[in-house]
Length: 424
Image (cartoon, rainbow, N blue to C red):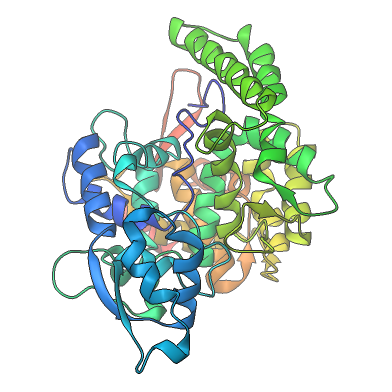
């Protein structure tokens, strides 16, 4: 069911790096039920494991720019020594997340998690629809995400055995399949904010700061509240509207303060709307350590169709893969042939199907679309995949079975074994 308001429920500055989700979702998948404390504290414990490594130039640069607190005094003393002061290449003890974040090839090298964030970061998985609220168990979208994360990526922070400090297995690097799924999820869950924010940001010709971007949020939040107040159907809906208005007031107060300090309401709210898009390749950073951003051709190519779309749902179902194809330069061909769609639908279905054989139709169409555009360089939209299944079900109702909700919307699909023999 479509969200009442498409806006992150608990945006926090710690929600910067998508890479942490790989370990978090994998850990959640190991149990039918979890809780915030278990997931959050285990994540922090895993990423903060200490390891001794040789001080490389890119690690030295990272230490100078990121590890500035007093607790890192000894590490900085080693890192800041000039080559003439060291008779040999020194070693330093840092956290395993520091090793991965110091990768010179990452577009952003910020986002280190601290013990203070143990109860905050898991909300990103909830907000993106990867985990179920309450039980913190895997939703089907989380299952899709985990299916495109390699075993080595899942265990990059694992405490069992040797930490795989292999530069080829950095969890903060995203594959194109991971980018597509996370991008779709972000727009689906935060689209009301994202469309309004990026319509403003696309006008910037020069690099801009997180503060400059964050200053737009009060106006954006109030427009969302005004548009949706009359659509509220429950007390929870009204509380959601009020929370958005309260956050707008808090950010306004920050704007009026010439020295608001770090980790304030504005920074908490704006960072998750900027940094993850750097990971996705839809924003660039002139300096990977600074919170300054640059609009690129990819930013414009993806966001202009979203901003101009009739609504977010229409964009996601009818234009998402076309826009992503152009933004990421995938050079895929638009093909909506039944055999092309059906072959990838069945592949996704076998990954996602429940013990009873049912899969949410949106989830199977999304994963199938990701397979097709990345593996065969052919793309189709989610609406085209669903139309194909509707057409096949009318022709051969014994092969395809749908479940619908009380409004008549298709929700789940189930195939019979004979579906494998369908062609053309």
